[in-house]
Image (cartoon, rainbow over all chains, first blue to last red; front, side, top):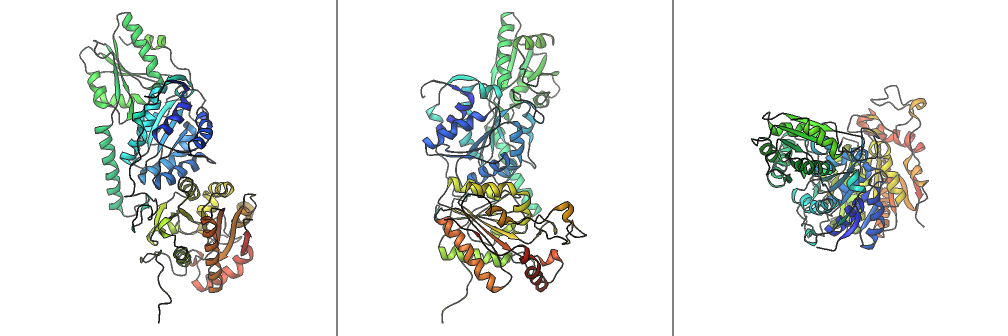
Amino acid sequence: MGKKVLMKGNEAIGEAAIRAGCLNYFAYPITPQSEVAEYLSRRMPEVGGVFVQGESEVAVSYMLFGAAGCGERVFTTSSSPGISLMSEGISYVAGAQCPVVFVNIIRGGPGLGGILPSQGDYFQATKGGGHGDYRMLVMAPASVQEAVEMVMMAFPLAEKYRNPIMLLGDGLIGQMMEPVEFPDHLRTEPTNKDAWATNGMDTRKSSKPNIVKSLYLDPKQLNDHNLLLKSKYEQMKREEIRYEPYNTDSDYKVLIVSYGTMSRVCRTAIDNMKAEGFEVGMVRPQTLFPFPEKAVHDAAVKESCKVVISIEMSMGQMVEDVDRCVKGKRPVEWYGKCGGDVPTPEEVMGVVKALI
Amino acid sequence: MGKTFKRPEALSENHTHYCPGCTHGVIHRLIAEVIDELGIRGRMVGIAPVGCAVLAYNYFTFDFQEAAHGRAPAMATGIKRVRPDLMVFTYQGDGDLASIGMGEIIHAANRGEKFTTIFVNNTVYGMTGGQMAPTTMPGQRTTTSPFGRNVEDCGMPIRMAELLSSLATPAYITRQTVIKPKYIVKTKKAIKQAFAYQMERKCFSFVEVVSTCPTNWGMTPVEAVKWTEETLLSYYKLGEYKKPE
């Protein structure tokens, strides 16, 4: 491990990418993640990397597509309205099977919404956003340290699946200062991409051109292509699910499902309620796609558990996945707030206690 | 006696899907000849547009990426920034470049990205069936301007070479055509010059090629050449618009 330093989430995310071995960053400024671009505009030249401020998020998504298509590690950071603009490019990146890491530091929506923390882009990240049948591997950190580790893990995962990956943080993760370490073991070498990337025939000593594309006019070919993509998403479901159980050894009456910043508030609420003799368990998904289906299901059907609640900084998005996993075996409730006013532990305690 | 005319190595043996009288085939060949002559096939990356040339990668024998509509200059930017040693060109039509991709081309040119754009201007959206483009001539009938382009509500056609030449960033910008052999020779020279500037990492280079689309113009190939010469070339004037110092 490197030494511990105090860093703002956004800057730590930028530094984590460099430490992971990614020296190419394309971005467009947007609150509340502009510090990443500001940090990397001075840091990339120091490490011999590439920093480009694109003319729009649309253009940035294609700069990433081009750079990833020719075999280089690339990433960007943005926030909700910017991710909407990048969604066209994300669909092409997924269709052409290029590894790109996207970081979304979510702000309130819809439209311009607000600039305070939110989790309102859950659907956009996990169910699409862009057109066509594609999925992204979506990771949700609950601390600056976890954001650092997830950014570093994202590059080899993107290359393993040749697929876009999204780190879904919120304004609080981006703006908060916390002590962080950059684990040396998460630095990885880029995989060899000679089999598919447009890195130049001379580079790979080949006489066969590589074509990076997403167009398949023949219906059978397009169906086969989609089946291939689907098989990758199925593999993610088998191999990449990450979650953290909390207080699930207890005989909890209520199970909370919560992620990111919201889960930290829930954790405090659970500790407080435990001190009062009221047991509450939690499953915190660290990957939102693939969703920890079995973990949520198994925790929900524990004999002591009477009710499940999805607590989100959104108006009932993740609750649909929770409901799907619980399969009607327990009532599934929702609580959430938007706009940047993060629910307090006391609020959560009130809501949870009222369920019983 | 030696062989005096052969297929360039950079051009594949596939038959193109282009219509009779279309000039894409000629332009493809010129690009391939230049790539052969410069010996850069092994480090070439082409960017195919959305439009008639979306399948361009089937007709060349080097690496290709396929862009979304209008985004080719952003993709080329990405490639050149992370791999400056690769030779990159975008191949774009007028719907792609002058309409939906206007933002990308202007900013790539203004940043002075070191790639080459071949801009094929035939004044219509070809692949989608001959709709009006930003380059469609006043009064020109298309499937979305059935009574002819009305400049009162559609404005005048955009002249991309002139527009890009107004940027202060150094660049090589030229407009050519391939409707007759005398023009083809000049176009090839321009493409070679554009690639040469890229090889020297000197500047952004842009070759507009005024082209024909007999199918969507509702003309025979011969009529299309005549109309190009008489109508288009008086509005889209040929020549070198900008050169780096």
